[in-house]
Structure formats: structure tokens, C-alpha cells
Image 1 (cartoon, rainbow, N blue to C red):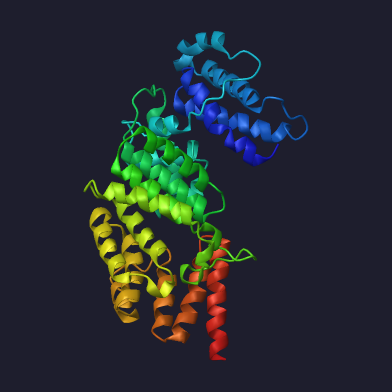
Image 2: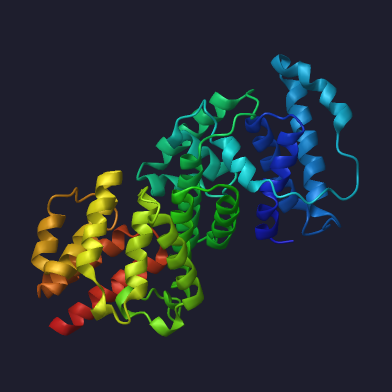
Length: 380
């Protein structure tokens, strides 16, 4: 039994405990204990019914914690409801858990952090990187969220916007990070789109499909990153692109623009270009302008600076970049690229090397290091 299988069972086991009356914070702790125990014992003695094993162990851990807490002694009658031995029903509770974690008692940012940690499977470090905050700050935020919902019955689902934010961050971590969560995020977003008629749900699904369509071309045979401009577009999944564009067009026709629709429109323009040189950068800049108005995000403005550099020349891109905080993730990499486009190879090589030292993952670090080496070789 590998760690991936054990981790994949967490949402369904967590759902069983929540449905049986456990408050979310205590249930999540109990399931975590059960997962640790599974890692310890399954390699030597794998169970015939992994989910049933985890439910039984997690439920007993929850009951042990309940008995130990005098303020929760009223829950001791739950011992009579311990799940019977044998196979457990197959129910996918994941999307429901996303909504339950977006509880009205939590702020949107706390709800997202709690869901990513408890249900999405991301580490505190990964969540902190997504939010551009120190890991210790994010750990405190998650702990506060758990305390806030401790003892709360999860019978008031949160709003769609918070769930979309979680799904988007899970997809991004799966697409860019070390853990493959992208397909799961797409699956859950398809479920949500089938259940809710909402243009931003459709926009997010379109965005995911358009990005996922390019995934096979993002890495070379040796695992190194391939920039968008250098990707083999023949390896892009045309069926996913067509599906994403169709979903996006239907959403935009409703004239209720949101940030995910705007991002999907940018992705669609990239997907529509037969070659990198034929990309409609002027339209992309216009969509980034819309996106900046919707989000006021510094990352959006950073990406816009790249688009401006392509549409109006590298000096215009550098001017747009100069208005931003140079502490932003990937700021230095963008500066390196624009300086290279402007012919300043020495500056670009230095900035690529600096960006490599700041990179969030190994693949990005290797790519930036190779860019610096390439320019240094040209100068020697």
C-alpha cells in the first residue's frame, strides 16, 4: 500500500466521520492519526478493505479524544454507532466537504486554507507559498480556523466563490507543484458545473481544461520545463482545448464577467495561436487589464508586464514591471526575460541566476539555471 493510496482515501473517510456527527476539527485530527497508523502498519499487513480499516481506526481515535475531553462527554453515546465491520459504502464526499469547510463562521481566506490542508491534501508550506505568506503565518491561520469551527455542526454550506478559490489553488498546485492534484480538481469542478448553473464555475472549468490541454508539452523527455513559446503545439490536446473554448464562450455570453472567465479568455488566446509568434498579445493585454480591475492582484500585474513586453516591446514591459514590488514571486525571472529581449544579456544572465536561487521548486530552478548558463556561454 503506497502513500498516494492512503492519502487518496482521506476525503471519503473524513466524510463518514462528519456524517456520523463528529465536528470537523476533531474528525480531521482523528483521520490524520489513522493515516499515520496506516503508513506504519499496512506495508507489513495490508487490509482487505482499506477504507473500512481507516474508518474504524479513525472513529475509535475520535471516540478516544471525545472521552478525554470533559466538555464533550455528551458525545459518548456515539460509541453505540460505531460502524460495523466489513466493507463501507462507496460515497464521494469530497465536493460536499469543500462546501462544508467554507463555513459561514470562517473568513474566506481561513476557509480556503483549512480546506486545502484538511481535504485538498496540500502541506502548510504549499498553501503558504500560494498565499505569498510565511509558513508560520499560514500554520497559525489554519490553527485558528480549526479552533473557530471546533464543536460547530457543519450543516451550513459555504459560498461558491470560496469553493472555486480552493479548487483553483488545488489545480495550480497539481499543475505546477510536486503533487499531482490537477485531474482531481478538474473532476470536482465538472461535478460542480453539473450541479450549479454559474458562469464563474464554467469559467474555472474552461480555464482548467485549457491549461491541462498543454500539460503534455510542458516538460521535455528529461523532465525539464519547456516555456510556452517553445512547446510543441502538436502535443496539445485539441479536444480539451475545444471543450474549454466552448464552455468559455457560453459563459461569456451571459455577460457576467468574473476573474476565472477572464483568465480562461487569456488561456484561450494562447491556445488559438498556431505558433508563438502569432499570439494576439494586444488582446491578451486587454484581458489582463480586465483581470486587474476584477482582482487587483500583484501577480496579475506581473503577468501583464510580460504581455505588455510582447505587445509593445521589452522596454514597455520593463516600465510596467518597475511599478511592482520586486519581492513578488517570479519578479526576478520576468525581469531577466525582459532584459534578455531588450538585448541586455549580462543583466539577464545575472537575474536568471538570482531567480534560480529564489525558485519555489526544483524544475523551475533548473530551468532558470540553464537560462543563465546559456546567456553566459553566449558572452564567453
